[in-house]
Amino acid sequence: PVKASDKIAGMRCIPLLLEEQQITVAQKIGGPILNIKPFVRKTMGIVTTGSEVFEGRIKDAFTPIIEERCAEFGVKKIAHEIVTDNTDDIVAAIDKVKEAGADIIFCTGGMSVDPDDLTPGAIKRYADRVVTYGLPVLPGSMVCIAYCADGTPILGVPGGVLFSKPTAFDEIVPRLIADDEITKEDCICMGHGSFLG
Image: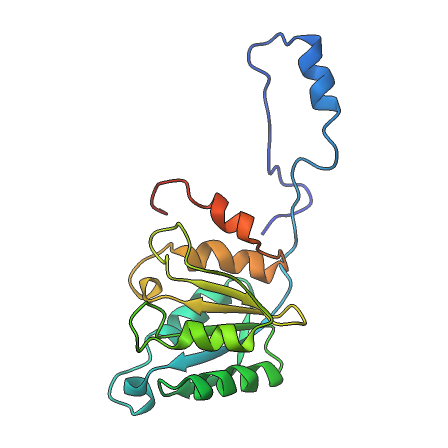
């Protein structure tokens, strides 16, 4: 966490002498150059999709990882639904965790492009707007970022979160917790051509 006395940024003029025109241009920059937003304590709801998990054939591996990675920000799980691979069931589960008061909704499972991966479509159906389904970030490129009409974020969490750290999840979640709305332009700017690490 950033404290009031912490140094968070710095700059240096190199070379030691600048032309007056460069100083004049710099002085005309409007607004702050750097903006720090505080983390807001949040609650989360998790929707775990997948018939195998629903039927108990495999263990839900996502929930403990999401809980662990969000704990450092003070985010507490208040609702968790496990549903089959059915769009109507996924939409109903998203609504249920939202109604339970979740400030952030995470949806896991079914996030790739296979025909039976229904989670992105369910998020699209429930959300007021989808910012992106896919990011130019590895690992975790198949993330879905969406917002409800009241601003509640829904994050479709891809499988890469299970096997790597950091992933797109780790880049996005702190911004969601700070109520820093993510735009399509932000997503495009993440494409630096390298891996997270």
